[in-house]
Image (cartoon, rainbow, N blue to C red; front, side, top):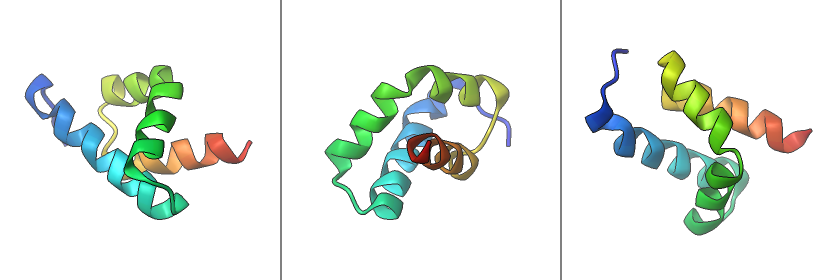
Length: 64
């Protein structure tokens, strides 16, 4: 999926919503997870990974 800078907010919102659902946490807490792992999130964006793949990776990071 080709991404552009205009779609980053939508992409990040999708990750936040997916994290909240998968981890059964609030949207606010999911936003905190993204902030805490911002380096990984930005790497995923730069690599062109979709939100589902990025969410999976974040869930694995949290489990470590």
